Each structure stands twice: as structure tokens, then as C-alpha cells.
Image (cartoon, rainbow, N blue to C red; front, side, top):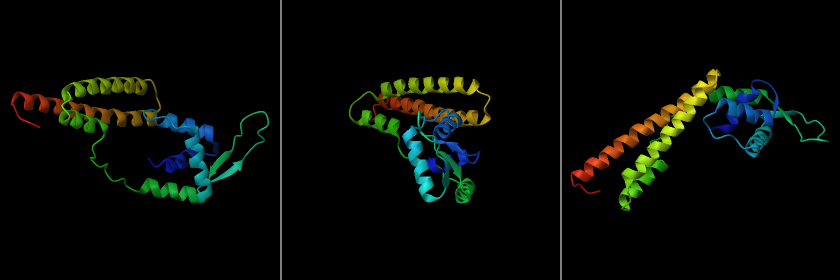
Length: 177
């Protein structure tokens, strides 16, 4: 994820301090791992160094945490525009951890089918949780974000089912790895 560009997009709504930027990110992408405050402030600091944002206010921190307010610069707005216009290449079909564990279990003498069953259960529970979250919000952007995550989980579930079937057919046909 191009975090800096996403933060520029959040600041396109108007100046904000890091705490509000983090909350806006987490609300816009409810299916993603929440950002750490340190990650947000580090990215905002880099954006400020690169001229994408500027500090517009840092009130006196006596009695509370410093609340530095950041605003999008013209250069940041142009960087955001260029990023939004660029088409992303489709994700590579590199093996993720589920595929790696399955193949390793198969070759190491483990029970790949049992691993696939447990992984399927975990994917189904994640899908149920995300669908509940999606259905509980009226925020269209959050719903679209969750729909994307659910679609990926669904594709993984299809692969898990096909892989388990293939392993089952292979073992009954006496084929080897």
C-alpha cells in the first residue's frame, strides 16, 4: 500500500493532526490492519520533508499531547492526483503463506488436507466478521473496502477447496507428490 498517498488523500479533505489522520484511515479501510500512530507520524514527517504536506499549527503542548496539524501542499495535491490517475498493475500470483504452508506440509509428510480444512474454517470466520462489519455501516467507502477483502477471502476459499479436492483425488489414485 502506498501509505503516503493514502495520507495525502485523507488530508485532501482538509488539515488534520496525526491522530485524526489515523482514525480516518482506519475508518476508510476497516478490513485492513489498523495503522500504528508511529507509522502515521513517521509517514507525515517524511511527507513534510518531501514537501507533500506542511505543518500549519503546533499548539503549545503544555498539559497535553502535542497536536501538530498537517495540511496538503500544492505539490502534495499534484502527487496525489498523479497517483490516483495511474493504473495499478495486477498483483502477482506469488505464493502467499497459505500456499507455502500447504506445499510444505505435503512435501514434509504433514497432513495438507487437514491444514487446508483448518485454514478454510479461519477464512470463513474472517468472512463472517467482515460481512457483519460491512452490514453495520452505511459508509459506502468502508463497504467497498470490505467487499474487496471478502472477495479475496472468497477466492482463497475456492483455492482451498480445489487444493483439498486435488490432494484427496491424488491420494486415492495412488499418485505421488
